[in-house]
Length: 451
Image 1 (cartoon, rainbow, N blue to C red):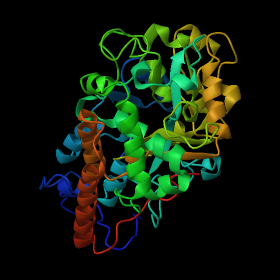
Image 2: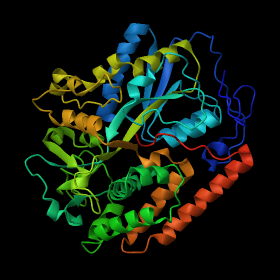
Image 3: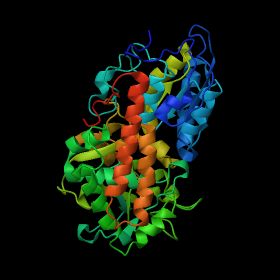
Image 4: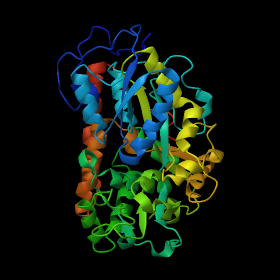
């Protein structure tokens, strides 16, 4: 049985208005229904955000599933998962499984009836109690997604052997790039989110991320001002360069930390644990410190709250094979394979991090080239609170405007951010008004954003 929340559209026999997804687009027209769950399907399609080396690691994992189940799996990796998925939904041909890095989109898809419930036994929920990985709207009666990969965000990367001096964390020493194709601006949102978390605490952070605190409240304004003052510290040069710099660094390079040219060859980079995939062959030279030690405005330099992100898998077509793939991706056995071993690191592969409590520090390389992975896991396991990336859990429309205003703010980081934040608040209130009008209820709030 599908979800039973009042006013929720049911998939069977309906016409989908894709514009209702995120209240952004108005794309009216019939969208194909899922194939009958009883129809045998011996081939699966998977859409995900991983390309390059990350894609190769994931495809190795899928090969194990293919060998075990006799099911062929075709993976499509793209940095434009949202656009590709919407195109497939509009054409009535979505992938069987999609992995998305933003929970806010999945909430919209579930509300519109595009997601298939996972069924009993796919997720052992007790094994994810150590974090916010199972966050979902209050009142959702079935689980529709699972975390398959997680990352630690409240960290600052530096070159091994060059431990940063907290007293000299001025802007000109930092690698900062806002470019990211259709989602440019998100690296700046990470800065603001982490500043707010370390400056005002997890309760204020969660209230803001859930949409229960207005954007013009003091905690939010103060975080923007703190970041703006920091980015203005070198006359705004770092801010200006960030607007024209890709966060991945130059194509074919080694990311920003080890790169050259604008934004590169710097000393510090506020970036998630996935950043080592950007550093190429120089990844083993990268080390990190927790961000509170260097972040402007941090109230406690030894603070234990950490911002995190996750990639979530969801099923868009019902089939026994799809259920088996979801169960496989959630299993500790598959997660341990993804963590890799010393042999994997000898091939230059970088581990993925798991939210599963049975895949702990001991699952990662003990020494040699990689002591950093175990330290990342240690931070995840010993944090006071883990808080999901705030923009990732926001509705897509709010997230998009957030990114836009980050870019506008960086163009003049010394400005009073109140006007920009007021505009985001207006968009949020309008989207909530439209939601009430369409669904005849209050917007659902995600629970356990911090845990």
